[in-house]
Image 1 (cartoon, rainbow, N blue to C red):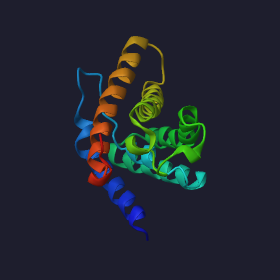
Image 2 (image 1 turned 180 degrees about the vertical axis):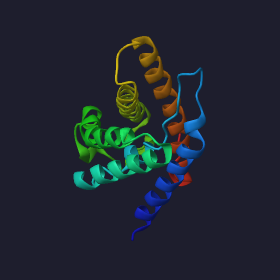
Image 3 (image 1 turned 120 degrees about the vertical axis):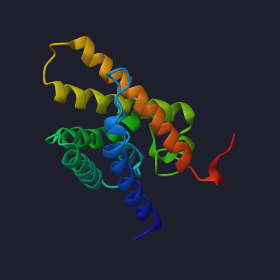
Amino acid sequence: MSKLTLQFILLGVILVFAQVIVFNHICLFNVGVPMVFIYLIIRLPITLAVNWVLTIGFFLGLIVDVFSDTYGMNAVACTVLAMLKRPVLRLYVPREEDLVRPEPSMMSLGAGVYMKYLLTLTLIYCALIFTIEAFTFFNPLQLVLRIIFSTFLSMIIMLGIDSIMTPRSEKRL
C-alpha cells in the first residue's frame, strides 16, 4: 500500500471515531451538529475512480450509521455526496489540469475556491441528512436553521483539520 492510502485509512478511522464519540454529542443552540467525517470524502483525490469514491462514501456512511444508530441515513447522504464531489469541483475548477495536487485542499485549489467547494459539499450533505432525518417539512424554519448552523460549524472544524493536515513545507503566505 502506498503512503497516501495509509494516510487516508488512518484519517478515516480517526474521523469516524471523532464523529461517533465526540461530534455526535455536540449540539450548539440545539440546532448545530458538526459533521466532520465527510472531510474524508471531500479530500479524496480527484484522480480516484468514481466507483472507488462511491464505495468509500457508502461504507464511511454505513460505519457511522452502525455506531450512531441512524439506520442508513448517513450511507445514503455520503453516497450522494461522493457522487456529487466531481461535478461540484468542476463548477469551481473547469479543468482538472489546473490542480496543483490531486487532493482538493486549500493549497491545491487556493483559499477562495476551496472555501466555496467545501461550503457547497457541506451544505449538500447537511441538507440531505437533515431532510432525510426529518422526513417532513412540518417545521421548515427548524430544518433550515439546523442545515445552516451545522454547515458552518462543520465547515469551520474541517478548515481547522485541513490546516493541521497540510504539511509544513506547503504552508506559504
